Length: 296
Image (tube, rainbow, N blue to C red):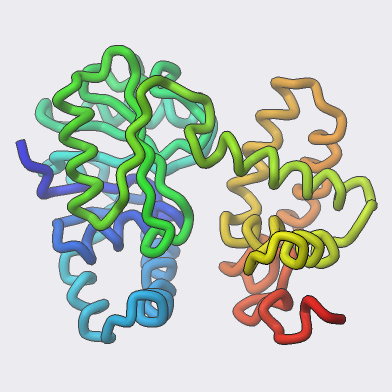
């Protein structure tokens, strides 16, 4: 079976990116959100400037991608033609379990199911789908159009032909596949990324230094364009907050509990990142991109 019709579940920042990238590469995509699609449409529309700037495409090329993308709040209708369903919802097992149990009632027998989970393993979720042989994970990085890796990870029960089919699919949509030979919590990217982000957050939460100071240190000393708090804004406050809460509970770590408390304060103040105009920086013109950021 060739993957030609894809349904993406969840119209948040990354779910919207995944859906548009697939559509941009010419495949039919339905973007499903359970109660409203308006925010998902806004997220997709915001990608236009990014694609034009980073990929040097015309407005017409961007609009052509939109022709392949539709939206739905009806799960059965959204998945009726799907060769592949990619789930991109909250990083909570209970939430994913409830969704998969609903999905299992309406999804066609042919359909491969994948999660974009950044921290959970296929083995933790496969049984909820009712089709463990057709279940695996595809982890995409934020800013999918330029940070175009796709980490593909199956469980011991994932059928090899399904794994290979999904690897081939990631190439079709412009990704560089990163096939994992065994299950690894946090995959390749987040095994390295999350401890780095958390170490920066702990410095901030404990009052050691301000976010801009921490980023400036990293950017100057490593000669890179962004620091951890710029990355956190790009990821989105809520996404990493859920990761921190889960890890704080699992490790009984007081530093991470403090981080979670401080992050929750910013979430309650609607300082979520670019989508609300303010996170750790002010958007769309963040301070770390000003010419004198590293010298003042």
